[in-house]
Image (cartoon, rainbow, N blue to C red):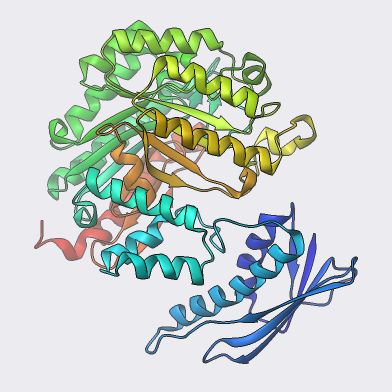
Length: 504
């Protein structure tokens, strides 16, 4: 779908306009220059940039039908250049979205928001002391977010603040993500750094050597600078793909290298693939006082698991869940995915009924996203997925089921190319929320990424400015350069916390 924009020349608007077009059409192209045979022509006439007044006309070329709306917005006095651009962008995007909704008949419940973390917007307003009614009105009028989604955002913000009352004052601590890039097989929808572990023992050994080095050096810096750790999260890949002995050595390294491990609020280990869980590995987790894990069925339909490349059975998921429970795992998360190939409301209803037999402490309901580099996206024709209406229906089923069974939402995030322009929502029973999930989504503190493919976000304690840094995604590149990456991260830590010495 090609949309030609007229009356605007600021190239910075290409990306937000394209992101909004992609909410309605697959593989959209937006241009500010004359195009041959565009599908839509959008004419912007801005009468007063100071007050953001004007009109927009959207012509659907093939149907020879036009749609019209006004550009309305306000410029706050004393705004910086960056803030002025954002105010202009939001006003233009609001008008543009309104016309696309009218032309297509599709209503976008998240309005003009296309980012990953919508709750950050409401947190900022809450932190600034803006009354709830005023915040909600702004989200409704200026972002076109539906009352339904505003209510979801509010419930999540309140839940997060009850779980982490000091959420707004944790800038002087850090959380740590440890990435282990191996899995039994790679799922068709996956773009995480995940490599089939079979036949890669040499790579695994080299990788673990680099990982231990990173943990020692980062832990040493944190100790020397009196920086506390809020949470630690082992992700991947599947961290339980490595052997029980390797896991044991890894957690021993954590206790030896990281400061004050006994007072870390939460340590989580993903054990998402049931085919990686063994009694020996569960004993190792118990030994190191780790009882929060994730065992992910994704679906309880065997044909679906085969289609998406998960080489375990439904029965194995259930057996390993029960084994983990018997061996003392007291906080188990399970992931489900809405909209997997060949699945509709009937299949998802069955998956929910099977989940009811297990009742994990938390449940993350994902909506399938066609990630650019995934096998599923490269071969879309092979994977038949549900319609937008049916996907919305399944999300509604998840909302009803979780409410009926005592779960409440505590975090959410969104992704590009997500089915139905919906969201991924984490639910939990009271007191069993993942603090790490809250920290990574709301970006209130520095997250140090250690290991292959691990991304770090350095959040300045005073300005909130975020500096990103990523380790290489493939084990060979990581093994060749982990010392250099560790040094660079320590430099970024020094820069981030350099003005904070007196507080520490």
